[in-house]
Image (cartoon, rainbow, N blue to C red):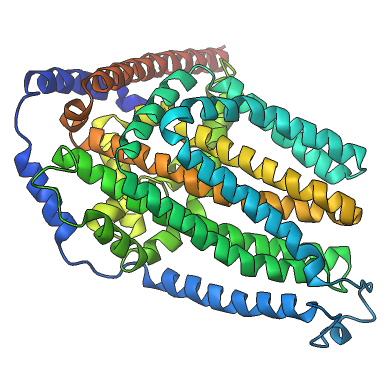
Length: 501
């Protein structure tokens, strides 16, 4: 939503809020029937091309991982692959089973952290999220110091940059954290009332762990191979990109299932409501892994990177101040990313869950809904997704540390190699637990944009708080648009005066 549109949206939002408060007791049965019909109707397969690409990628990579791991399992060069690398790559004699247990430690630690998060979700979620925000920066800085101490200068600089960016981002959004934590608490409240979605998250962590067993078997074969460090790193980067995509697909599949369930519960007024579709969870699960799975695979390729870039630009943009030149440059990047967000955003997963649309269609509809209602101003202010990401990052750092420490005592020259890939494993496993809450957050915002009365019926106090914050954000945008317009008029006047002189 552009700043020039803010005054009209602010006025319409205020009028809409007054009307909603007058009509708060009205029945919403008609809309309930509409959503129930949309959820129950037969669905077509969407984004089939990306579904085929993902399945072929899994089959092909699974074969390659098996070959790489088996080639060094209990015997050096079992499949006689080294003859293709002798002469131009350094020789290294190692076995798959020497490094595979180290990845088993990473998988075990990541699983324990993920399951612990789910178990403590109802009682300690707020404390765990606060710890994640405050500890992640310090942890990154400490890891950077240890990398420099171990003479791993590249990784020391990389973690130092990560710690700096994390610190700057937290400072830039420190005033938004209370509101974001409130939204997360409400999301935890509704998720905790749906124990069946928690069981889905447990099951998907096990599925991810099984794939990681094969992935780590092949990665261990790469670490133990006769290739030089350059060749090993390139292969591990390729394998890590594949693991990231696979993990993102599973996370977003859980996202679709959870967000669909939460949306239906909010729309129908509770899981026990008579209008609630029967077997909602199983239908959501079936849709997610069949007709909508291609859309999930497609969205998982891009949404994480675009969302992270958007967080950083928004945080930096809010702290620029009156530097018009710098603001102009950042605004260009901001609007470029906003254009991408229109077609790649996490709120598409709610639309996919409820109506079975394609990913781009769902993302566009969700963003147009937010812009037409003014709720986009609220979403721009909220940083709950970043808070959950910090939790996943902290889980990954802990997992990488555990695997790295054991590697140090067994093979000190492979610490960074094992620690960094183990960190990715930990982030994915913990992320599978975090996405349960994120799915609830996206559904809450979609429901508020569709009909704020749905949120009022569920939690009147939360409705008042979120409506007041929306009122403030639209007012802030209106004032900011006026200041920017006044500044530009002054600059134009100075330019005209200089030419006339």
